[in-house]
Length: 460
Image 1 (cartoon, rainbow, N blue to C red):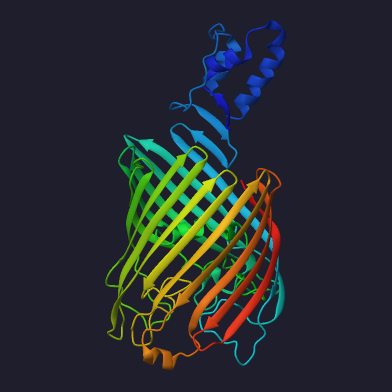
Image 2 (tube, one colour):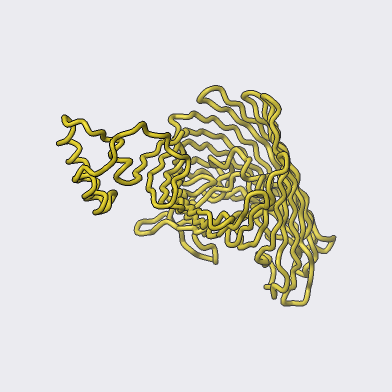
């Protein structure tokens, strides 16, 4: 539901105020205030004072979109909108905070898992962000000729202090001592150029295509999931990243998205080439490529969303090794009445696990295969929602030599999640979670953690 306050010059204001003598004094005061605030021009102000405006006539309904020269403020259920002439500005955002108690694995002789997501250190407590940092988003859109033009900026500040160590940027490990400052992750900076019926081009930095549906449909997106490091929290927790899917990330790109054809929509793009996180460095000769197909449909009380996405990139290492990392995923979300069920699966080669190109090859550039999945359900009854999910991410050896050289390499990360939500207001949701996470190495080493999280998330 949207409410608009429209000012369209002296004539419209006269219609609003009327010409009853008993209202003359109050009208004059209002006219003066509007002039002081710059809403009325000098010419309009003088016209109203002199009484030259036309006699009142029945007012026509306000148009859905203001013509050039009109000004109005638009307030909506989500965000704040402002239109000046043909330019629209939308501001929206989100803040979250959780108390997280994690009973992580105590370090022992059989707990080392290279690539595991269970943090060592025993029992820890933190006040921290969940899988999302906070964010504030600005969208400026307009129509020029027959083109729809947009500029988009997304700033993601965390509540926890960042070290900016080891090349991690705003999402580096945390620093929970005095006199520190939180990190600001500038994830989104992109333009859009589109035309009705022909689709839209996106140029800049935004969320990727491959595995984006996995995280956007994950119930832990609004909460915590697997916490990762909880002794000194970073900008975000892990949610199901590395425990059911590979993180899509926010990447420089040029992508095209088609119009929707009966619920079917196709996206494809060229991406900044990402180097391996565990390799010796690369020359980045070739860009990355990603694509996604989504189908949305509703049949009465039944809704369905299905998707498939893919990724491919050629890697040229400085030591001469070459390989192509690739992956494909499938997923579906089915809703009926209060119940929503989601299933997801991915398989990849030379893509790694948890993050793109993490542990993707052995030290000689031989590719490691990986795969994973998650299943979840969410039921909503009025203001209360109850959810549960289970997921795994698996990493395989490149060859027998890799197995001999890396006995503690990750075999499987897995987790169970139970979640309870309560919609306190249209902006604020209270959330509680229980998470059990397990990391297991190929040689049998294991680490387990149990996590309780409680907090709130606010969208405006």
